[in-house]
Image (cartoon, rainbow, N blue to C red; front, side):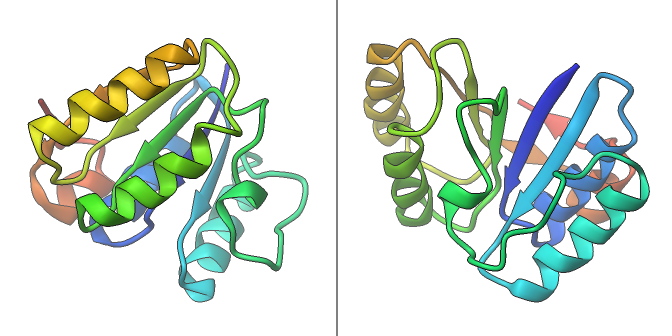
Length: 145
């Protein structure tokens, strides 16, 4: 079983996170966003399914949603600058053998540079663009490239 954190609970990320709640291989799913309402709503759904963290932090920082026990972080943000900010934090939090998956629109150059930083810490990094829209994300039917 795996512990996953989804960063970015908007239309696509929120749908992907909710699909993960339904997965039998995921033991815990947490969701981080700068919107308190999106975080609370997702936590309530994950908790009802028995897949949430024991409690919800009131402080919205990456460090309160990702720790050394997190297996996978899925990043679904609007742009490269947001991804950079999150990845800078993750480099000091995540353990060897864990994985960061970026499903945001980022440049190939940024992906290569960021992958090298994670590789130095023996953390897997995958640039995985997505397509299909929010309904398909919620249904677990998006295309991951």
